[in-house]
Every structure is written in C-alpha cells, then in structure tokens.
Amino acid sequence: MDSWITVLLVLLPTGVAFWLARETSRLRERLRRLSRTAQSKQKQYQKIETHHEDEADLRQRTEEKLRSYLQLMDTLINTIPNPIFFKDIDGVFRGCNQAFAREIVGLTRDRIIGCKAGDLGPQIPEELVACLKRNGVHSATFEAEIPCADGRRRDFLFTTATVVGEGSEKAGSVGAMMDLTEKNRAARERAQKEKFQGVLETAGAVCHELNQPLQVISGYAELMMVDLSEGDKHYGLAEQILEQVERIADITGKLQKITRYKTVDYGRHAKIFDIHQSSDD
Image 1 (spheres, one colour):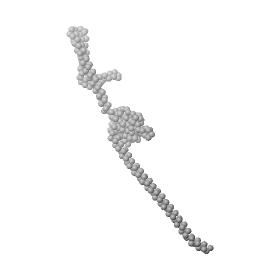
Image 2 (cartoon, helix red, strand yellow):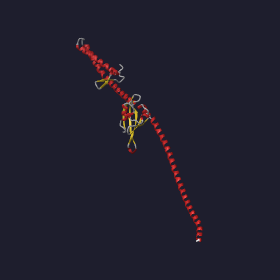
Image 3 (cartoon, rainbow, N blue to C red):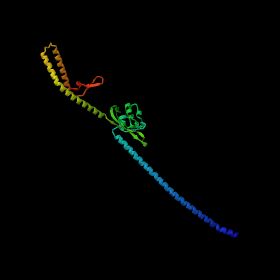
Image 4 (cartoon, rainbow, N blue to C red):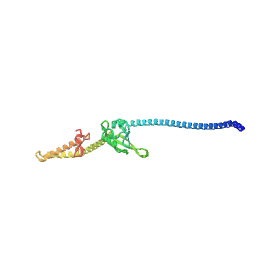
C-alpha cells in the first residue's frame, strides 16, 4: 500500500505538469487564432473605414462639382437676354433668370420661385398671368402682347417645352420669351410703305389716264361757251362742266403730290385713302 502511495506521489506532479502544459498549449493556440482573427477584422475595419473616407471624399468632390455646375448654369441663363422660366408639374416656378424677374414680372427671383403665376400678387397683370399659365406643361409656341414691368406693352413669342423626368413622366416645363416688338413694328412699317408705294403707282396711273380726257372735255366746254350767249341755259351747263373739270384737275394735282399714307373712316367698317391729308398741297 505504501508503495502505491509512493508511486502516486511521484506520478501526480508529472501528470499535473503534463495537463498544465497541454492546456497552456491549447490556450496559446486559441490566442494565436484570436490574434489572427483580430488582425483580419482590423484589416477589414481599416478597409471599410478607408472606403467610407473615399466615399465621403468622392461625395464632397461631387457636391463641389454640382455646386460649380449649378453656378455655371445660373450664370449662363442670367447672361441670356431673353426671359427664361422653369415650372414644375403643378405650375410652380422652380427657376428663372434675371431678365424674366426684372423686365417681365418686376419681382426678385426669390419672390417668384416657389409661387404659381396667379400667386405672385395683384400687381401682376392678368394678361401676363394668363400667358404664363397657358398650355400648362405642354410644348407650345404662341405670340402675345403683354404689359411688362416698366408699364410698356410689348409683343413676345412664347416657346414652352415639356421637361421629362424619370419613367418618361412629365416633370414640368421650361419657357423662353423673345421680344418681337421691334420686328413687328418694322413689319408694319414695311407693309405700310408697300401700301403707300401701291397708292403712289395707282395715283400716277390715274392722273395720267385722266389728264387727256379732262383736257378734251375742258376744250369742248370752252368752245360751247364761245358759241353761246351768257343768257343761254346751255352756257350755265358749260360753266358747271368747267368747274367740275377744274375740281377733278385739283384732285389729280393732289394725287401727284402725295407724300404720306393717311386713311379716313368710310362707313362702319371700312377705311379709304385720304387724299387731302396725304398730300403737301
């Protein structure tokens, strides 16, 4: 019995030492695995952090480019002398250039953006509001005479185009205005000059064709008066003929001196050429 106890006392430290050595080895292996896992996770976290930093930097650069692009576009539309405006699908103004705000509406851009045409205030003429509402978000081209911010009435060509958003759905419209006032005035003046030229040519032809018959009629009337006594009733008729001949000669004289185009009302809905106001005589 004593010998077994002696053996146990000898072997026990050896077994404990072996167990401790084995557990220590296992713990060390687990620590190495945990260390490798931690290093791998740390690298992943570093990659994620680097990716987030890259994304943030890219986002910042993109926002800066977008701000620069928007500033460029704003500068471009404000450089264009033609009034330009943008509306969404509900008819709310989402943008405009200085020409539209200052010359057409007479308000600041901040006051216009975010409002509908009918909500800009009572100082905006109804004619202008109607033109800005016309055709909604549909593409269209039309001319209209509208009162501007300076109180003058001017002719404009309105051109609107539909803005298409995602899914090919209508997102709003963009409109541009072209001042046709001077062009239309020049066209009217050109048409008046063409009419005046036609009047001059007609007047010249009429005078040429009337002069010879008038001379013949005048000659015969004078011969009649030579052969008739003043008491004869036909003598008075010859005098009246001469008076009317002189009147016609006066009219043809004025026709030959026409220098401007003037008309006068004739009846309810007609106008005729006014010979007396159109000549220098």
